[in-house]
Length: 467
Ligand code: BES
Ligand code: ZN
Ligand code: ZN
Picture 1 (tube, rainbow, N blue to C red):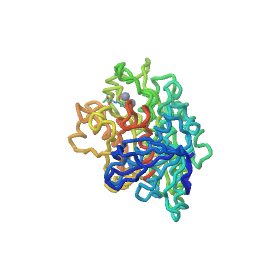
Picture 2: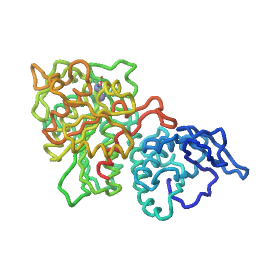
Picture 3: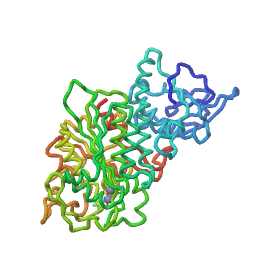
Picture 4: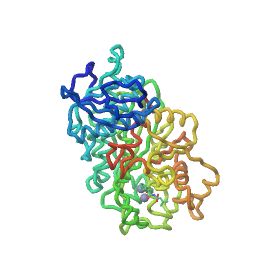
């Protein structure tokens, strides 16, 4: 539970402190410098306990506020302190939505334990926020309730990504989203294997058909803006288990393959948060869900399939399955759902982590205006994205001699060719492609308190496009 309170009265408090000059508050221990994420805990004679978290010299960015709060929540969790207060007065305009959202996200992240979907509420500490001036508290209270809901949805995305592959099959994934959004104004639809086959969704069915757990195309429709007929499409990769297929992944690369549905989870969580907060937006999400396994019917390199769009695809690597299922989902969302613009988000290439490491996701687009909107959105969320170019030389790399396109490029720039492959199915609609293979999962915390495993990447940035 996260609430606003007007006074500080609890036994445990957290203070965020700028790097020290000489005018120090006499309560703060003199060895504390206030360096970024430096922490010290101290208690006074009356037994009131204070945790100081350093914020460095400059005005903190959203990302830094989130990290500092996360660090504090983590320390409190480690000490088994279940109720405490945070002084927000150190932050510039603490009543801003982005600040409250970063605070809520920081608390949920620091307090997070790997659980099954839905357990986050059980682990949540009771946190009281204070330090917002009285004239601003009413608006802050409303914003905080939105921010908390967004952070909870992000935790839900994390839960789904952390769920073991054998406990979250494509059908379980679909059911989880249906149940989770059951009371929200979202229309959910599921297109099952048999129907997908008759529709000609061969790119999805030929990957998903490699498993006894059949593929599903999951659709979510949220119409929160009656004044507009514009609809934004979101497509999220939902591979619940990616073994690589016949181009089998090496054993050492297999841990984490259950997280290959993080794009789908982010899309579902963002739509869920938009609907829960009744944000004025019209969004349709499509999540192709499947496993990528080996069976006598699996694809092998050299095969050619006819996608839903009619384009023929030469399969050169069965581990490049994400772009195949995204291709059919993309054609479907553009043709059948008639969206006006579309974002796809996916754990698509190892190459993106080779380029940007684990802090920054790759971005490709063909539309500057849409990019402008998305840039504003991800700046609010504090996530990092970086644009990669699309040149005609890159496009050439996907040319096939026996089909319309190949499913892998030449060596290098794998993130670019993967993105361009998906773009080929967007039919000219304004398009943004997000490759979160580096940011969706973390084996080692990038800053103190970040839980290992799923990060919930993408959820907040997608949400902020509309709010
Ligand atoms: N899901 C993987 C990408 C991935 C790799 C995600 C590492 C998270 C961590 C994707 O399906 C894949 O296997 N991509 C291949 C493409 C290659 C065969 C062109 C890759 O990146 O190696
Ligand atoms: Zn793969
Ligand atoms: Zn994959």
